[in-house]
Image (cartoon, rainbow, N blue to C red; front, side):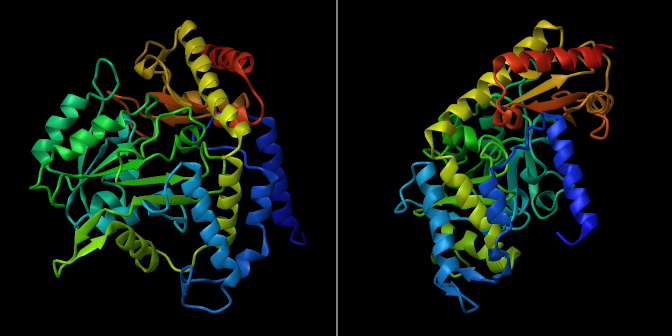
Length: 407
């Protein structure tokens, strides 16, 4: 690289990543093949539209590429192309979620999503996000005692509020989600829902998609109408996103004509929100999807969960309060303040970073502090599992976390 300043910064970041223990739950370590696809000549091509329906010439190769990425995405999750469609163009998770709402929810309509302090994501209708400005969030949370979702309470609220769409997913909820119960909640909204036959059920599986692919977490596809996911977390791919949608789902347009969810979502992605797709990114997604289809990845996904459980158990033994009492996934939410330790999330994160352990400060259920300095930290096992760590290594990680924060 001739640009020595940028080369130096890249090398510095490589060194930083190698010398720390990365417990950021939304990060991972991609393969050399993923990096090679990202840095390929595909970045030179502009291809507004979709395969076979482009607005530029010279697309014979990239049409094949995008179609291959779609095929691999459906195959990875065991989905029939006759029943499901997937859009591989979203640049990341936030615009993917935004595209779904833009396509399916009337402006000013209701989005039922987990509140931020209970583990939800900004794009599940939070007021600081565009999703909370164009639409109205109907927030739901967890039971204050068990810190897990109370599906009976969720159903009561949904029936009363009649949201157009219900989002099942999280950014900081460590337990499995019961997608069958979410389906029942969506259906219970009744025929007077804004979409006609109950609420739309959307699953945002950004955090646990790789675990679903590896059979280490329940699959949402039997019950969901729409499934969104990023690719760069447990799927171990580039920063990108996918939108899966059932082909048989339709919505009446302004003329009373039924239009498929798939067509509406495709149009919301392009031209609604984006221009030309990032083809180098789509190629890297295709590489990651193929890697995730291997037996080795299944073992990886199962190890991710084992490691997270060990981390939670060991920290519990050392006196740390783990939100919900444990984890069923790759992430662990640690109460550093209200559980008796009296350390704010920011201080905990800063102290750990100085010791070479990278985490993020995070709100917890029943939050009494601010998002800038909340009551907890979120940790994840995906990146360090990619680097080969197993249970014994995570016992040591828990010991180090305890030493740093107890000093």
